[in-house]
Amino acid sequence: MRRRLVIGNWKMHGSLSGNAALLAQLREGEGVVGHCDIAVCAPFPYLAQVQGVLQSSAVSWGAQDISAHTLGAYTGEVAGTMLDDFACRWVLVGHSERRSMHAEGDQLVADKASAALAVGITPVVCVGETLQERESGRTTDVITRQLAPVMALGAAAVAKVVVAYEPVWAIGTGRTATPQQAQDVHAHIRASLAVLATPDVRVLYGGSVKASNAASLFAMPDIDGALVGGASLAAEEFLRIAAA
Ligand code: PGA
Image 1 (cartoon, helix red, strand yellow):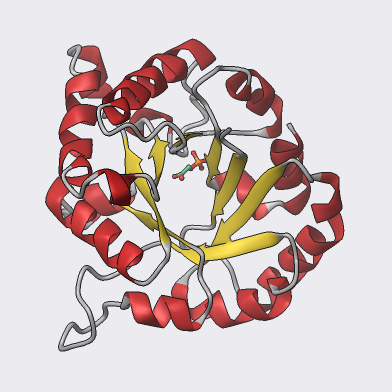
Image 2 (cartoon, rainbow, N blue to C red):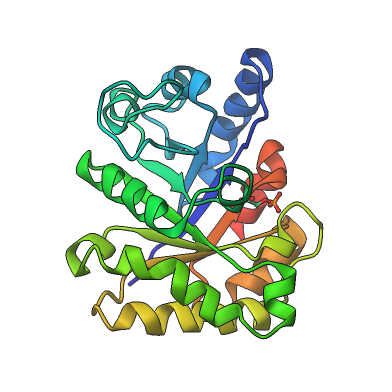
């Protein structure tokens, strides 16, 4: 049985004072959501703050990126052991903003997933096609290509990852994939993973998820939750998504 999972991706938003208010509201409201896992992925400098407020709460936390390397001369990078020092349970890898703005390729994304697993952190592997790729009928090919190096890590590793399908054209645009469009790709991802006999891998949808569209997305059989950007910055909206 795949337990529902809703993860907030704060992206490069936040401040000590703003986070304090948001985290306090999450703690107050978390009780309404007993049936799913909830997490927030915060910018690195705020991990200590998030850990301080959320420890012993039902909301877990993680980071938005991880180095593929262990400790060493990698200026600006953050190692898995460092994330583990702040008890991160999750880390996003291969978010489309990192793929497009930081030229992260499929193999690097898989290496990052592997680095996370090496320290016991669950990588949330993000995949998704651009509008141009969708319109030229290449959606499933792109997803297959993006997943391939992750699949090559083997069944034991893949059983421990979370996959997030985030069509690039739906991220931050207010244009959500229809539940059926998302379901079609989720079914493709599920079928791809089935080759490794990993039926319990959770596949999240991301891209303009809001309280008003969450329930219809979550009604689809292969959608196990959501990766939420903009709407995760308002506690009430985020908790309503999780409640859906
Ligand atoms: P959005 O972002 O919910 O603001 O579209 C989702 C994401 O990038 O993870």
